Length: 495
Image (cartoon, rainbow, N blue to C red; front, side, top):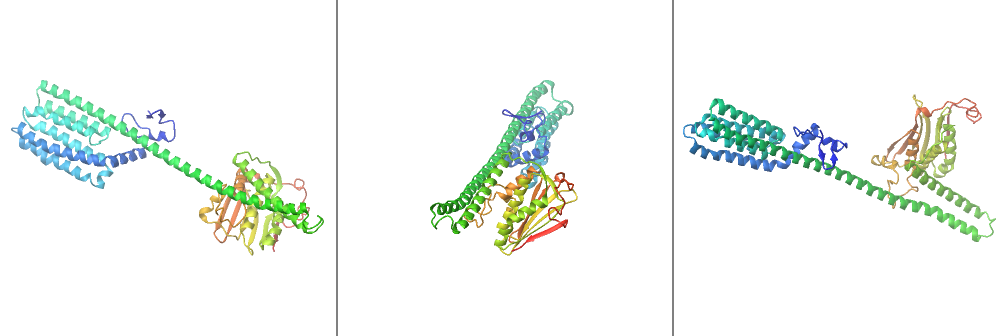
């Protein structure tokens, strides 16, 4: 059986389904939820509970005046029950309600309060004589209604105690201190009706409170999710604003060079086009164009990856050959920056993957390493396989490093560790996010280890099923055809 909140089936969703409770006992099936509800209810109701307990004690004591007028022969016995046995228990419960002990198990103390007052009334019925014994059922009616509706005793406990008190009264009125049948029927009519009304009121009251608790909890959780989504949205907007600022800077710089140097060529400002000076301008234009192309390719590839439209085309190739080609691309740049560039890879690292994308992975890693490594530093590329045939490429540098709290951030697109206004290195920050997407497409992983000020190591790993052992014919020749004689070749270029 499930609880429906408005038009929402409490068992239809993961969130609301946690709040399913029994219609019979009004208790949540999840014990953690039940404990949380009980704690919340007592916290919110504690001032009212203390007030009702205090007034219950005061009223119970004040009825001692009525005892004096209606009880002629057993006044001492009645007062003994009321003032010596019951009132000390009630007073103790009131005092305990101001301590932490009460908060730990409030239903126990509230039950004790109702049981003590009810059994006190039943006891008074047992020790008094006619006609006083006919009248004390009215006190039991008050106990049942008061305990069921005012002191926030849970429905299960109030129902059990109320029924037990009515049964105890029947035993006393029929067997122990018999009351005339006509009077007993009259008393029972009002007592049973009051008990039924009290139980029903207790049920409806607690049902309403539990409905309200569920609604409040769901609203709080929904508000929390909304705030998280809003925070993420604001962060995304901020990140995209930063990204646009970076893009505008990165695109403007090479475009200015292309436009400026091409204008020199067009106007022949330094003489006819045959002048050697124009050759350096054409090289600058070429480099700026290549830089723009690289930026645009990164943006397009990442956009396709984000839209799940970047597809891979598997082909067989040698990983060391790919690394060798990429290292040659960065050799001159590293030499100009005064960076030692070296790599180590065995010749048997044959894989099945998208060569263009894997080439882009290594280019992006090397580009970052060169960009963030100062003159005199070193970059080392290592390719290896493990016992599970997984192939890994590790790029280590001695650059500026990444703070530990920023390591996960650099893998997210549009996130810049440095602000756009204070960036000291060119680039869009799309390299590592794109590497992550490409490795995910290949079923691989990326791991980053970094210490601020000491350097960074990035390791990309392909799963073992992408390992492919070639024969000499498949590889297009032996190692000597590729100029590789040592199976664990180490090549390095240094400034």
